[in-house]
Length: 349
Length: 254
Image 1 (cartoon, chains in turn brown, green):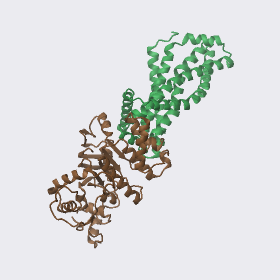
Image 2 (cartoon, rainbow over the protein chains, first blue to last red):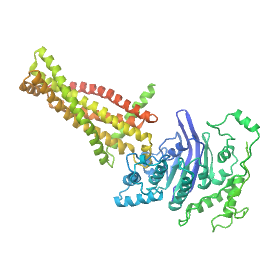
Image 3 (cartoon, helix red, strand yellow):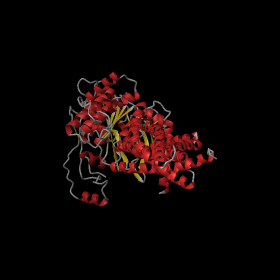
Image 4 (tube, rainbow over the protein chains, first blue to last red):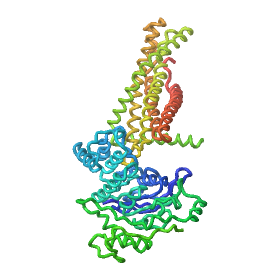
C-alpha cells in the first residue's frame, strides 16, 4: 500500500523570486492526486521539493516519518527508493540503451540475478508498450517513447509513491488517454500513492481522486476532485474551462485595468454548466482500486466541511455509481446519470 | 561579487570534502573507475610522451648552456634531471590531465546535468557524487601518478640524448652528477604533486560540470572555466609545495 505524504507550510524561492509559499496538503495513501496550475507556477519545483531534490526554505515534507527537507542526506536517499518519478522528457541516461536505463535502479539497489532483472524489465517494457525498442538508445526514439521509458524506469522498483511530471506533454490525445488509463491501472495493481502534475484538462477530469491547483505563488485549493471541479473560485473556473476571461493572463496575471474592461464587456457565457465526468475505472480483469473504498470513507467523513456544491456532487457520485456495500449516502439520489450537470460557475468575486 | 567568489570557493571545497568522504563509502564503483581510468590514460599517454621529449630537451639545452658559461658542465645532468623530475614532469601531467581529461569529464557531467540525468539518478536514491564523481577523481589521481613516472623517464631520456649528442656532454658525467645531486625525496615530492594535481583537476572539472549555468552554452563555458581554474590552482599549489619542500628537505649536495 502507498504511503501518505504530508506537506506542511512549504515555501520556496529562487533568490528574490518567490515560487510559492505556505503550501500545505496531504496526499492520502494510495490515492491519485493531480496538481494543476498554469505554466510557470512552480509545479515541477513542487515535485522536486517533495523528493528532496530542491530544498525549500521553510516547511516540511513528511514521508514515512522522514522529513525530505531537513532530514540527514542518508535518510533522504533511503526514502527516495520508495519514490518513482517520471520526468517531463524522461531524463534517460543518454549513454545507455532503454533496457539498461530501465534496469539501472534494479542493478543499483538490488542483488537480483541478471535473468531476473531481464524478466522484470521486459515486463515493465511491455506494460508501457515499448517491446522491440529495448535495444535503442534514448537519442534514437521519439519524445513520447522516451516518456514511457521514463515511466517504466520509475516503476521498476515497485515504488510506493509515484510522481509524474506532465505525463501528457508531447503526447497526442489518444496516447494521453492511454496513459491516463495506464496510470489508473497501475494504481489498481500496486496501490501506490500518485501525484500527477499537469495542465491537461482531460487528465484532470478523469484520473484523480484529489485535485489541487497552484496559482499566483500559492496553493489555491487542494481536496477531493469534486471540490475543485465545482469550485467557483475565478482562477479555478477559468482554468478548468480554458477561457481567456478571468484573472489568468498570458504572462502571469492580468492587471486591474484589463480586468475592469473585461468585467464591463458583455460576458460570453457560452461554456454552460460544467459537468463532472466520471472517474476512470481500472481495465477489465484488474482488481478494483483499494483506494476507492478508503477515499469514500475519508471524503464522507469530511463532508460537513466542504462547500455545498462539492457536497452535492460527492453525494450524487456516491449515490449513483458508488461501490456497493456502503449503504446509501445521504442526500439526493440522482438517477443513473453518468454525467452530472452542475450550475455554471459565476465570474464571481 | 566577492561573496559570489567566496561562495563558489566554499562549494568547491564542500565538494572536495564530500568526495573524500564518499571514497570510503560502499559500494565502490569499480567498473566506472576502470572505464574512466582507461579513458583518461588513453587520451593522455601519447600527448604526454610527445610533450615531454622536447621539454626535457629544452631544459637540457638551457641548463647545459648555463652550466657551460659557469664552468660547471659536469653538473648538467643533475640539474636538468632535478628540474624535470620536480617541476616539469608534474606540470606537464597537470596540464594534460586538466586539458584532456578534465575537459572531457566536465563536458560529460555538464551535459548530463542539463539533461536532468543527474537529477534522475539522485531521485533513484543513487548519489551522483559517489556513482560518477568519485570514480572520475580517483581515475585522474591514479593516471596522474603513473603518467608522472612516464613523463619523468621520457624527459630524462630526452635530456640525456640532447646533452650527449648535441652538447658533447659525456654520458658518465651526466649520470654521475645525477646521482650526486638527486635523491629519493625528489621523486616522492614529484609523485605527491602529481597525485594532488590529479585530485584538484578532477574536483574542479566535476564541480564545474555539476553546476553549469543554463543550456548547452553553459556547458561549453563550464568546460572552458574548469580548464582555466585548474591551471591557476595547479600553478599556485605547485609554488607552495615547492617552497615547503625546499624548506623541509635538505638538498643532497649542500
